[in-house]
Structure formats: C-alpha cells, structure tokens
Amino acid sequence: MASRRPSVVVTRRLPPPVEQRLAELFDVRLRDTDAPMTRAELAQAMRDAEVLVPSVTDRIDAALLARAGDALRLIAQYGAGVDNIDVRSARSRGILVANTPGVVTDDTADMTMALILAVTRRIPEGLATMQAGRWDGWAPTAFLGGRISGRRLGILGMGRIGQAVACRARAFGMQIHYHNRSRLRPEVETPLEATYWESLDAMIARMDILSINCPHTPETFHLLNARRLKMVKRNAVIVNTSRGEVIDENALVRGLAAGEIAGAGLDVYEQGQTLNPRLRDLPNVVLLPHMGSATLEGRIEQGEKVIINIKTYADGHRPPDLVIPGMV
Image 1 (cartoon, rainbow, N blue to C red):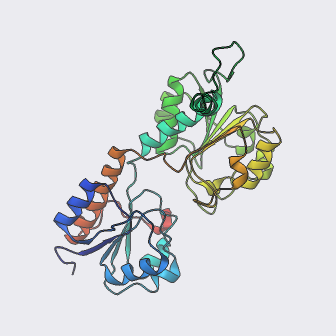
Image 2: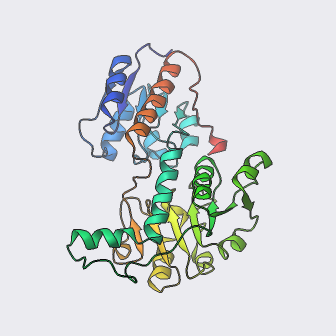
C-alpha cells in the first residue's frame, strides 16, 4: 500500500516552484546540481525510491531496472517522450511509468517555425555579422534568403505537435502536406487545409520544407535514410525538433555538404548531446541545444503533471498519464 508521502527521488534540477511543491507533498530528495546522474547514481536512486522522477536524458534500460529496489513502484517521467525507458521491462516488474504529454506542443511548434525562418532567411548569418562588427550597411544583394509564403511544407508525423506546426505555417501562407501512420479525420484535416500523402517517398520528393514531428520508435529510426534524402529537392530545407534518430545524420551531412539539400535546422541529434563535428562546419545549418520545449511556462506545467501523477498514485489510483507498453 502506497504511503501518503511516498519517497521520491528527482534526477535533475527542476524549476523552483516545482521543487517547492514536490517538497510540500512528498518525502522528496532533490538534485542539487544540474548535471545528469551517473549510471551508478541512478541505480542507487532506484534502490532508494518508491517514485523516481527522471528526465529524457536518463537511460533506464532493462539492466538498470533489474537493480531497482523492491519499493520502486512508479517512474514519473518529467517529459513526454519515454524512449529512454524500457517500459515493457518496467511493467513486467510491477513498476508503472507515467509521462507528461501535451504540455510542450505549442512551445515545440513555435521553435519549429523559428528554425524554418532562421534557415530560409539566414538569420544566424546576419546575427554573426552584427556581433562581429562586420556590417558595412544595407545592400540589395546582401543576405538574400527565401520567402516561405507559398512554399510546400511536408510534415512527418501529424500528432499534436505536427498539427500545431500546420496551424502556424498556414498563417504564414504555406501549403500544408503531411505523412502519418494514418490519415487524420476529416474534421481535423479540413480546417488545416492539409493534403495527406500515403507514400512518404512521393511526398518527400515534392516538398520545399520538411518538418520532422514524429516520435522515435523502431519503425521511425532513420525514417529519413540515405535513399530518401537523395529524393529531397536541392532547394529544400529540413527541420527537426522531434528526435535525432529519425534522420540518418551522416547521410544528411553528406547531402548538405554536397549542396544536394539547401539547408537544415536541427534542435535534436542522432547521438544525443554528442554533436557530429561536421555539422558545425556547414554554413547552411542552424544548430540549437535541444531547446524546443524550453519555456518557463512549459517546464512548470510539466512539473504539475508529474506531481498529479505521483499524487494520484499515492492516493491509490491509476496515474492519469500512465504509459501503456503497447502504445509506445
């Protein structure tokens, strides 16, 4: 039977309002540094806690779950994605897994549009010129980018975030196209004026901008592989605010370096925080440090969802954001 104040271990520093509320409600051990836990620290936390609050940077695989203490009954992920957790192994050991879906939809969609504009309008180049004091004044041919109105935007993954990107892109006058596991219902698709493509290959070959908004699963690993990247138009731009593993990064680098792809805006990377050094050398790439969801409002909302999941569990009920293994 869960206690009224379950023992909770948090693996990363969280916004102060979230930490304060956690301390008020639970017997919580907070993280006093923003550095990720080592594997040994994570294993110890899983031996000590009844509830673990990890982030998407904490890899909780079957081997680590096998070392968990008998008290661990809930992993309340601080984040929507759960590909860092072996959910099946957790559930087989009687450990529930919850997450925080839907919180960062607007924040990530905003960042997607920011990257589209940054790449097509060459914003980082202009910023670097100003910061270096190299601006010689306005010129008719300086920093010529491209207009996004009228361009065809192909969205890979039309879930919450993909639909939010579509809404924003329509306001910029873009044509909306999408590929998804299944076609949207007419009442969702029609207001977006979105065109569904059953064939991903056919869509990719015709788009001006590709936005990656699908989760990382075994089926989406290298969804944009070397073969498909060869199909992309030479003047096309690729933006990824989802998961780095969806794109074959080495093939993307080759295409960008050869001028076969016009540009890319990336907030996520195939090897996590280990950045492919060749990406830094490409002038047609905008790189961000996985900050697509980084708003104070969003981080606090994530914390509130974590707290609700823990409190509901502690009260003897099913957490509202329980992750079902078959749905991952």
